Image (cartoon, rainbow, N blue to C red):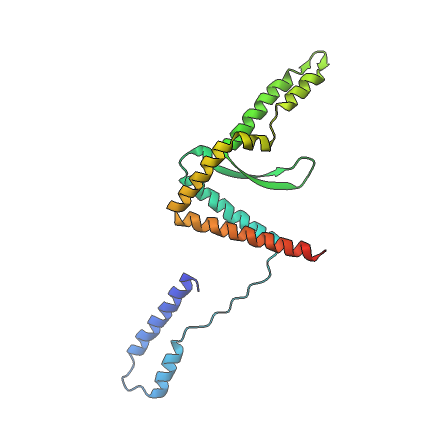
Length: 197
């Protein structure tokens, strides 16, 4: 039972015992048996339907947003703040939801800004110099390279998450809930797609 349901049930029991306490003392045994049966807890039936992958995924997104909101409020530095957004993959129209810490997005912007400066040098009144253009493109770091460059920041981020989880039980509970939801989602996804083969 949920705490609110328990509270309501306790109120009903206390109200009924107050009413019964005000009756005559000459209550016969049949009335006493009715009173004891009326104080018995009401049974609760919960019907849980089969959840689709979409509803499971949406629940993960909601809980992750809540998790990152709490983390962003409690962390020691703004560069650890995590934001999520929908991005389209290269050569795909299917959006993917990605979450990045601020230090990573800042590093990505700096890398892109530097590469754009190099690319501009490839353009002149005579046209585009393909060698300079390719050199500019080579300056753009992909996400894997950026993660390698920011390995120390990711280590500090992990330590910050552990610190907050050890100090804040609400954050720890949501963190464990998100992990469970993701594990259940992956298991359901595997069952669905493996059963088709």
